[in-house]
Image (cartoon, rainbow, N blue to C red):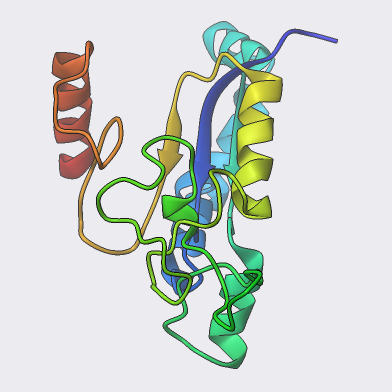
Length: 182
Protein backbone atom coordinates (compact mmCIF):
# COMPACT_ATOMS: atom_id res chain seq x y z
CA UNK A 1 0.00 0.00 0.00
CA UNK A 2 1.44 3.37 -1.01
CA UNK A 3 1.71 6.27 1.35
CA UNK A 4 -1.04 8.81 1.10
CA UNK A 5 -0.47 12.48 0.36
CA UNK A 6 -3.82 14.19 0.16
CA UNK A 7 -3.85 17.12 -2.22
CA UNK A 8 -7.24 18.41 -1.33
CA UNK A 9 -10.46 17.73 0.46
CA UNK A 10 -13.54 19.52 -0.85
CA UNK A 11 -16.58 19.84 1.41
CA UNK A 12 -20.00 20.71 0.07
CA UNK A 13 -23.44 21.37 1.58
CA UNK A 14 -22.15 21.98 5.11
CA UNK A 15 -25.44 23.71 5.86
CA UNK A 16 -28.61 21.81 5.03
CA UNK A 17 -29.94 24.61 2.83
CA UNK A 18 -26.88 24.65 0.55
CA UNK A 19 -28.46 22.61 -2.22
CA UNK A 20 -26.46 24.26 -4.99
CA UNK A 21 -23.07 23.71 -3.35
CA UNK A 22 -23.10 19.92 -3.60
CA UNK A 23 -23.66 20.25 -7.32
CA UNK A 24 -20.80 22.75 -7.54
CA UNK A 25 -18.39 20.38 -5.77
CA UNK A 26 -19.31 17.74 -8.33
CA UNK A 27 -18.92 20.28 -11.12
CA UNK A 28 -15.49 21.32 -9.88
CA UNK A 29 -14.34 17.73 -9.60
CA UNK A 30 -15.85 16.43 -12.82
CA UNK A 31 -16.49 19.49 -14.96
CA UNK A 32 -17.42 17.58 -18.07
CA UNK A 33 -17.11 14.22 -19.72
CA UNK A 34 -14.14 15.37 -21.82
CA UNK A 35 -12.11 16.12 -18.67
CA UNK A 36 -12.90 12.72 -17.17
CA UNK A 37 -11.91 11.08 -20.44
CA UNK A 38 -8.67 13.10 -20.54
CA UNK A 39 -7.79 11.98 -17.01
CA UNK A 40 -8.37 8.33 -17.83
CA UNK A 41 -6.50 8.57 -21.13
CA UNK A 42 -3.54 10.60 -19.83
CA UNK A 43 -2.94 8.40 -16.82
CA UNK A 44 -0.09 6.07 -17.73
CA UNK A 45 0.68 8.08 -20.89
CA UNK A 46 1.78 11.44 -19.50
CA UNK A 47 4.60 10.90 -16.97
CA UNK A 48 4.02 14.11 -15.00
CA UNK A 49 0.26 13.60 -14.80
CA UNK A 50 0.70 9.95 -13.80
CA UNK A 51 3.22 10.88 -11.10
CA UNK A 52 0.77 13.39 -9.63
CA UNK A 53 -2.09 10.90 -9.48
CA UNK A 54 0.22 8.18 -8.16
CA UNK A 55 1.23 10.32 -5.19
CA UNK A 56 -1.77 12.56 -4.51
CA UNK A 57 -5.38 11.76 -3.76
CA UNK A 58 -8.33 14.10 -3.94
CA UNK A 59 -11.30 13.44 -1.67
CA UNK A 60 -14.72 14.97 -2.18
CA UNK A 61 -17.51 15.09 0.35
CA UNK A 62 -20.43 16.22 -1.74
CA UNK A 63 -22.92 16.56 1.13
CA UNK A 64 -21.39 17.17 4.54
CA UNK A 65 -24.71 17.49 6.40
CA UNK A 66 -26.96 14.78 4.88
CA UNK A 67 -29.73 14.89 7.51
CA UNK A 68 -30.01 18.67 7.31
CA UNK A 69 -29.87 18.47 3.52
CA UNK A 70 -32.71 15.90 3.42
CA UNK A 71 -34.77 17.99 5.86
CA UNK A 72 -34.61 20.97 3.50
CA UNK A 73 -36.31 18.87 0.83
CA UNK A 74 -39.10 17.57 3.06
CA UNK A 75 -39.90 20.22 5.64
CA UNK A 76 -37.94 23.47 5.85
CA UNK A 77 -36.10 24.72 2.77
CA UNK A 78 -33.98 27.17 4.76
CA UNK A 79 -32.84 24.71 7.46
CA UNK A 80 -29.17 25.28 8.29
CA UNK A 81 -28.22 23.04 11.22
CA UNK A 82 -27.72 19.32 11.72
CA UNK A 83 -30.70 17.27 12.94
CA UNK A 84 -29.24 16.09 16.25
CA UNK A 85 -31.13 16.36 19.53
CA UNK A 86 -29.75 18.48 22.36
CA UNK A 87 -30.41 17.06 25.82
CA UNK A 88 -32.58 19.40 27.89
CA UNK A 89 -33.84 21.36 24.88
CA UNK A 90 -36.75 21.03 22.48
CA UNK A 91 -34.65 22.72 19.80
CA UNK A 92 -32.99 20.59 17.14
CA UNK A 93 -29.56 20.76 15.58
CA UNK A 94 -26.13 22.31 15.76
CA UNK A 95 -24.52 24.71 13.30
CA UNK A 96 -21.83 22.45 11.83
CA UNK A 97 -19.69 25.43 10.87
CA UNK A 98 -19.54 26.54 14.53
CA UNK A 99 -18.89 23.01 15.89
CA UNK A 100 -15.20 22.70 14.92
CA UNK A 101 -12.62 22.87 17.70
CA UNK A 102 -10.91 25.78 15.91
CA UNK A 103 -12.46 28.89 17.43
CA UNK A 104 -15.14 26.92 19.27
CA UNK A 105 -17.51 29.19 21.17
CA UNK A 106 -15.94 32.44 19.98
CA UNK A 107 -17.65 35.44 18.40
CA UNK A 108 -20.41 34.52 15.96
CA UNK A 109 -21.37 31.31 17.76
CA UNK A 110 -24.17 30.85 20.27
CA UNK A 111 -24.55 28.62 23.33
CA UNK A 112 -28.35 28.75 22.91
CA UNK A 113 -29.59 25.47 21.33
CA UNK A 114 -32.44 27.37 19.64
CA UNK A 115 -30.07 29.72 17.81
CA UNK A 116 -29.19 29.17 14.15
CA UNK A 117 -25.54 29.50 15.17
CA UNK A 118 -25.65 27.11 18.14
CA UNK A 119 -22.13 25.66 18.47
CA UNK A 120 -23.14 22.46 20.28
CA UNK A 121 -22.32 21.15 23.75
CA UNK A 122 -18.63 20.72 22.91
CA UNK A 123 -16.27 20.98 19.94
CA UNK A 124 -16.66 18.25 17.31
CA UNK A 125 -19.81 16.94 19.02
CA UNK A 126 -21.63 16.45 15.73
CA UNK A 127 -21.06 13.22 13.83
CA UNK A 128 -20.78 15.21 10.60
CA UNK A 129 -17.91 17.27 11.99
CA UNK A 130 -16.28 14.46 14.00
CA UNK A 131 -16.10 12.21 10.93
CA UNK A 132 -14.17 14.89 9.03
CA UNK A 133 -11.86 15.55 11.99
CA UNK A 134 -11.16 11.81 12.23
CA UNK A 135 -10.53 11.61 8.48
CA UNK A 136 -8.00 14.45 8.65
CA UNK A 137 -6.26 12.94 11.69
CA UNK A 138 -6.17 9.47 10.11
CA UNK A 139 -4.80 10.67 6.77
CA UNK A 140 -2.64 13.63 7.77
CA UNK A 141 -0.38 15.53 5.39
CA UNK A 142 -3.29 17.33 3.73
CA UNK A 143 -2.07 20.08 1.41
CA UNK A 144 -5.41 21.82 0.85
CA UNK A 145 -8.77 21.73 2.58
CA UNK A 146 -11.58 23.63 0.93
CA UNK A 147 -15.08 24.14 2.31
CA UNK A 148 -17.47 25.62 -0.24
CA UNK A 149 -20.57 27.53 0.87
CA UNK A 150 -23.32 29.21 -1.09
CA UNK A 151 -23.55 32.51 0.76
CA UNK A 152 -21.47 35.68 1.14
CA UNK A 153 -19.15 35.34 -1.88
CA UNK A 154 -16.12 35.24 0.41
CA UNK A 155 -12.80 33.45 0.21
CA UNK A 156 -11.59 33.11 3.81
CA UNK A 157 -8.38 31.71 5.22
CA UNK A 158 -7.27 30.26 7.50
CA UNK A 159 -10.41 30.70 9.64
CA UNK A 160 -13.22 33.22 9.51
CA UNK A 161 -12.80 34.14 13.17
CA UNK A 162 -9.17 35.34 12.87
CA UNK A 163 -7.90 38.65 11.52
CA UNK A 164 -4.12 38.47 11.91
CA UNK A 165 -2.05 37.61 8.82
CA UNK A 166 -0.92 34.00 8.38
CA UNK A 167 2.70 32.95 7.63
CA UNK A 168 1.94 32.26 3.95
CA UNK A 169 -0.26 35.35 3.53
CA UNK A 170 1.30 36.49 0.22
CA UNK A 171 0.87 33.07 -1.38
CA UNK A 172 -2.72 32.78 -0.16
CA UNK A 173 -3.50 36.28 -1.46
CA UNK A 174 -2.18 35.33 -4.91
CA UNK A 175 -4.14 32.07 -4.93
CA UNK A 176 -7.28 33.89 -3.81
CA UNK A 177 -7.00 36.48 -6.56
CA UNK A 178 -6.43 33.75 -9.14
CA UNK A 179 -9.44 31.81 -7.84
CA UNK A 180 -11.88 34.72 -8.04
CA UNK A 181 -10.81 35.60 -11.57
CA UNK A 182 -10.95 32.00 -12.84
